[in-house]
Amino acid sequence: MATRSVYSNAIAQIAGKVATALISIFLIKILTNYLDVEGYGLYAKIYNYLSIFSVIADLGLYTLSVREMSKHLERPDKVAHIAGTLLTLRTMLGVIIIFVSLGLAAFLPGYDSRVALVGVLIAGIFTLFGLMNSAILSVLQAYLKTEFSFVSVTVGKIANFLAVLAVVWMVLPKPLEWLAGGFEKHDLAFLAILGAGLLGNIVMTGMLYAYSRRILPIRFFWDGPYIKQLLIESLPYGLALFFNVLFFKVDVVLLSLLEPPEIADGVVALYSLPMKIIEVGMMFGTVFLNSMLPLLTQSVGDSAKLMKLVRKSYGILLFFGGATALFLAIKSEMILRLIANEQYLVPIGKYDSVDALQIVSFVFFLFFTSSLFNYLLIASGKQGRLLWINGAIAIVNIVGNFLLIPHYSFVGSAWATVVSQVLLVLCTAVATRDVIKFDFSPKMTAGVVGVLAVSAACLFGTSWWIAQSGGWVAILGGLWIREHVKWLSIAADLGASSVAFGVPALLGFWKLQKGAGG
Image 1 (tube, rainbow, N blue to C red):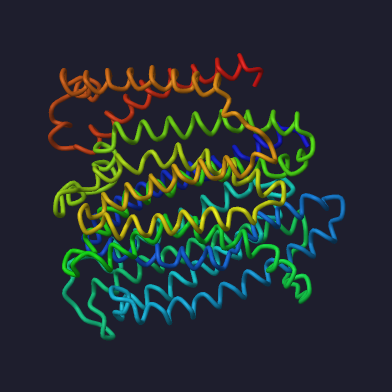
Image 2: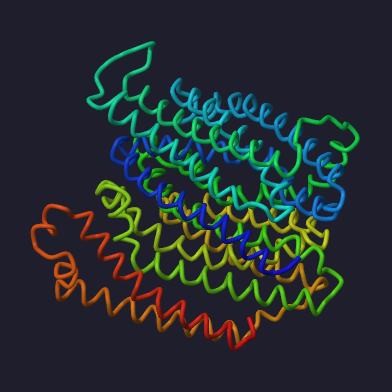
């Protein structure tokens, strides 16, 4: 299996993520304007809440099934057996979490209203289809045939986007006065927005299933002993994933519980918007590592080959994680102005969304690096160690939130998240020492830091020129645009900044890779 296949496989998935990320920008823009801050806060609370249950239901089965199917690619019947059993198991778990999440939500402050409970139900069904989609995608991942996921994910996201537009412009436009079925009109609109997301997931899952049957027949299959084996094997890693997601998601739940009720949804909205940006971006590193997992698994035991793969992966992840973190931190205000309305730049207490984004942006750099060590443990069958690491760090994160939220609100949550990621990098690096003694490639690390420093200087210079000389006005061709089409001037600012930062960064990294023989 050539490394080129991994790259083409990863690029196809990344292309899908880029397309959906662009659509997501417009979706966020629409949602943050259509829903008020409190409404978006409830929207974020519901999806953060369900994401915790989604990880419980996932149990790490996607990654482990890719690993197992990669060992039997010459036996399609065996792969079909694994895939069918996985699809059955994921569907059962998805149904279970719908009932469990609803039962618990009824007793949680902020989740126990009628509209919130119906929202939890809709988001639960959304999660069910997501789990089924992931089971199907694991087969394509094992065969490195995930190119169609670009089409299915994009079409699904477009269906979601069009459905949201229909709600906003045609079905339930503002004003909000009107009652129907016991729900206020803005509550119906809120639930319709959640339903639009569910529609997109159904479309995506259906398309991916239809395509996957060309490669391998996948159907529901019940194998009790094998399901038991899967659960036993995946439980340690599944719990590790749960703890890992917990310290990304529990802060929203804790904010809704620890902040005063009258501002809780607003605070959650200001924090959730930056975290949504981080969440979307983190998927790119995961896509790359999922593509690398079959190669890492096959290279365990061949230290030279494994070291080469790890060095190459580390360089790529370090560069893109660091570049994303720097750009977000420097241009955070402009990014938020583009994708949200002015409410998110108005502080609740002392802080606004810009403060949070400038802090949590560095999660990219840390998450990409720690994920490499995670996948090394998975490839070598030592994923059980992640249970203890992630469990300990989740406790640190929860304690940190309890200590910091009363004094620093959601900025305290942001710092707790970053500190947790630092500890995760250190702990996972130590845990892989008996698999491979990786030294963090000092030469590559120094080179990437140097390239990013030069790129950041170019970005600061461009930003200064735009701010001081009105250069962006010249680019756009007039003061009228500045005054009347502000989003376009912001987009031009970000476009010029992206070029000023991205061109020297990519050229510098290309030279580093070429010098390293990559």
